[in-house]
Length: 235
Image 1 (cartoon, rainbow, N blue to C red):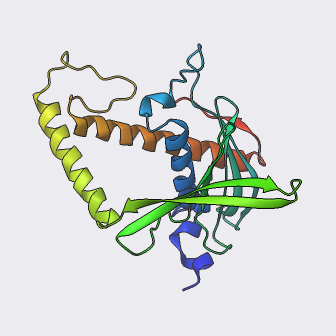
Image 2: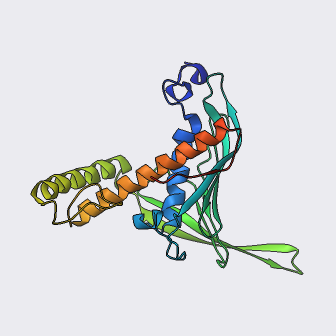
Image 3: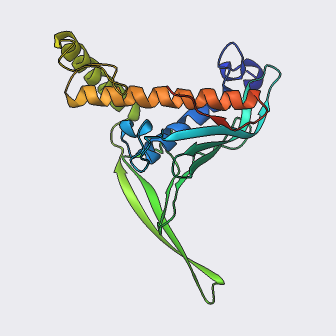
């Protein structure tokens, strides 16, 4: 089959977000996790901002290509965060596979590099790199230090996903059905009532998903407006 003619990700009535909704989803989710320090509450609260400004401020598709149905298949995107931090990513159905993530920032000597954040390599042990570069010989020669951080990959990620889903669903059902409306009121980071770790994790993951989708909508709207920089709306 011809991917560009037959695949659901290239059809307006299938997946109208194309490469942004597919490949871009993982990039935005990674940015949200990194800049929130894995704290879902940071998505609507910036501790460095007295005004409580949202973590995500704006989104823009700088360059893009779309098919005859208006579905993007190549895009360069920017997502702006509070504190003048920016996630930049390229997602494409026409370029070679490249799922490399680089995380760096001012004041840090190292850059974290991960080459399989979505689809892992085979093996029981995976790793990401901490890379430090320097200059010697009158700043004409580059030096490099690399530290490999190993991660356990003995369990297949799909198995982990379903195990976690089962844990969350079981606790959500138990605690939501037994909780009174006044015992633990719903708030802006909470879909389900309950005090267990499992319910807390379920709420956090739901919150990240909703905010990821919200950024996706802003990026698609940016394409409709010819690549305009848009404020990301409240969830």
